[in-house]
Image (cartoon, rainbow, N blue to C red; front, side, top):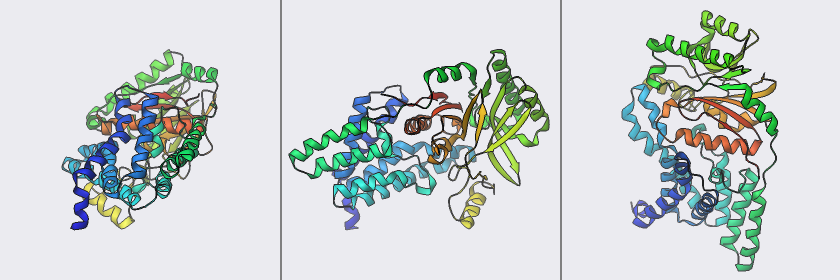
Length: 414
């Protein structure tokens, strides 16, 4: 008990809160449309200094509160499983995971060891959830977000904290290496051509209505109307969100024939479910009266597939999800041609995953259903993560959503 009492002092909690606030402010500023590059860079540097120097007790609270500030919205999805009572339990549980992770970093005695641990956090994904990326602190700042640049920033701060005055001054020049950004893969003319010829068709369906059989016919009619609108506008392709058609599309022959007929006039990329012994979350490409199905590669932890051992996953699915089966997934990302370009397909959560950016694709068509977490900062954090990956890989991302978040994410250049 004496050991634990040190974690509940006013000093530890206050320093942890201040640290978490500096590490989370950029999300909430962006949520309300404020981008202050140099101020955000200063907050990012301050956050890292906190993490390199705070005592272990304060660092535990920093991780716990940072986890809550970044991911409090995770519990909102339980509303749609009649498990609303779990929301106040999930929020602190998520924070506790990151509190323990940061607390472990706090056990390291030297800033250099902590710097290595913070850098390694890029590869530590509790339960397969990879949305905590410390380099995200520097999105929309003058610094680049590539991993080596983040390591440069950590090295500079470690020298500043550990060495004498002259070495500290010289080390600051190392920050200039973190300013580099590579050129885009796509020329401005090509990007303008795509903006002109693609029709993004976002939707705003509440999650509790989206899967109701009562509204299925109306949803299908509205989606077909958007496709016809794109045809009338002379577009080459139309992209709809994840599960835009809330059904197993490969089992609805009439709707499939309708989409195949429309694909003689326009390329259609849409989300829907697929079933073949196992359910899949998939993207359907209708092009020149042919259909191609591309399955999701990285399922959402617990939402689509449990990262736990099989026996435990079955128990959780039975207890909380009426015995529903986990979604199956593809082994590798899918590339396809659309509007004269090669694209990488991505569905919601996986659009921020490193696996989907293997080979540095020039273009990505990403579709999401953000209604699970509306209203919250989930779509804001997703947008920032997409910018991080776009900047790292030089990939232009056309992102279409149900709910907030539809946008074209372009890599930043100096």
